[in-house]
Length: 186
Image 1: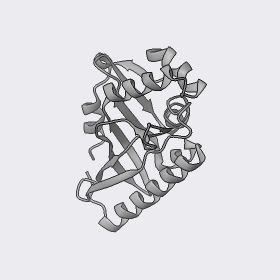
Image 2: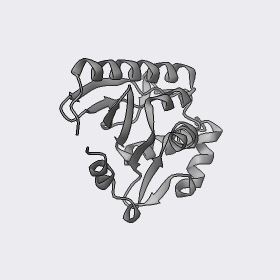
Image 3: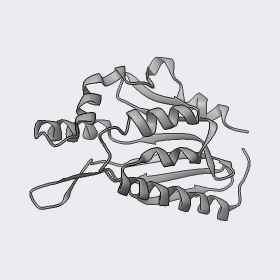
């Protein structure tokens, strides 16, 4: 794995987080796709039996910023902390998941637990690998509660009905995310 200048990694984070914040304001998540290499791998766990995997910028654009963000246009995912390993070219970013809906006290409804992303930097202000982590059970509970109150966008309700029939969902037994990280070590 190559080492990268810390100031370059910090500039990458600054650019990425600024674009993330803008996407949260506009609801257009597609602009984040420019931050991934053509062959990047982006994944996360979807419970005990499923993983989500997008391979390549095109799938990241269509599935991560498209089908997986459908109905989450008004949600915000502000980063609250980043940790940088400039020797490995890796970054951990910790973020929150904030709904546009508010509780009885006027506070935005938030998915509890820690949300974050583990990135591998490729140089040229692009990521080549990303693994998200969040509390899947808490996310499901919030989405179910909002659905029951009819406070979810129709696209999200439809997405929830499809479950594992969404593009990019694969059985855990068929995807070893550790291997994708190891394959990215240069």
